[in-house]
Image (cartoon, rainbow, N blue to C red; front, top):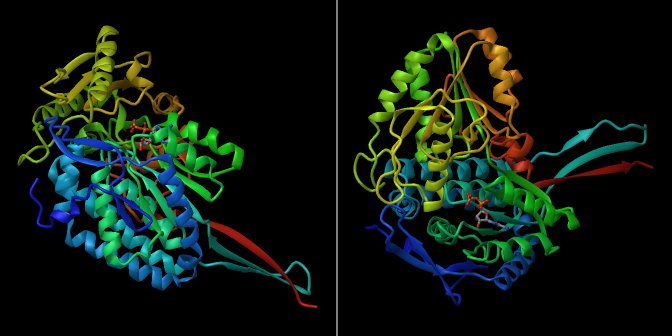
Length: 480
Ligand code: ADP
């Protein structure tokens, strides 16, 4: 990887404002080629405890700044991210595998949260409530929740961490973050730029670690940590909830999804196909808002499957740093095995491959469309997290709403129709935190991102995103 600023490729951990080598190392590999990219500091549970202690010590001073002062710092950090976007994208593609254009998009998307929350830092308004008695006045203020611990996944190595650091810092919290062991370089590069922006020591720590369990326990059991913000699997979300129960730890959880994508007969066919392409094949299908189940109504079904298959067959598969690549490798052999297992199960139960269907070299997999998919197949229940698009046929609105909601997940959903009444009915009936109507792309810093049911707790982005890092305090003022 060639960088204009090689110092962005940091392999030490950022512990309370000091760059530390640590004892053992984490090997970071290029998922497209399997080659070794870097060896990164492997932090211990004791390192996490030290970072938390420093975050606790730094928090009152950080919170004492005005919103405008914190905003100025975040703004500088944002500007540095933008100025170094090409290098950050190259690092991201190298460690995660997504096409360079998508990586650049992710850097800008991550930066948009830093910009947004820098602006919101100035707007953490309280409220005055009319007194309930003649000699009483009631006021409500928002205060930072305190020290936050963040745990992030590998699929958006920059944006998932930016989405947590920015609102926490804007609100006046200090934060200790553990990125995924597969992709620590993007998180460390963000820390390099945060330090350059002038973030005070102790306010931020970024600790890569193989010992996810140990750091997770420290975050849950250390009373100085007031909140945990996690993005990852529902299973680990459950573990953190269980572990945090003893201290009633506050949690924000962005967990798995099983997004339905519904195409009604009256949909604009081409728009639906393009929507399905981005909703399914972005990041090679490795996003929590990727559709996992496409429902096409009987009247449009065959044309939709034919056109989608044609478009999917044209997608270019290759290493993310090769010009023109649209589908990169999967993150690991285990991820590939899951895609294959879902495919084998669906075929055995009668589904038909209309394009793709084969494993390529390394962890590359052909983008694939399956038709004739039914509810009893594994793919209908579990998130595939790969480039496999299963299409179900349906007849009525009521039938598809019931099928779409028949899951424990509730993150993203999509519906394509030109009937305004149906837009409202279906949008209201879908048990999901987010609905894309005639679009396959819904993520933006200005809207509340998050799920219901077992897809999580809390929201990231929008003015609600900063509220998750604050506590309300109410004061009752007696006038006598
Ligand atoms: P994925 O399937 O995307 O890897 P995970 O939920 O396993 O999803 O991982 C998301 C993040 O959670 C990663 O940073 C990982 O290291 C971390 N993690 C995994 N297991 C635990 C755990 N028991 N406690 C805390 N964090 C964990």
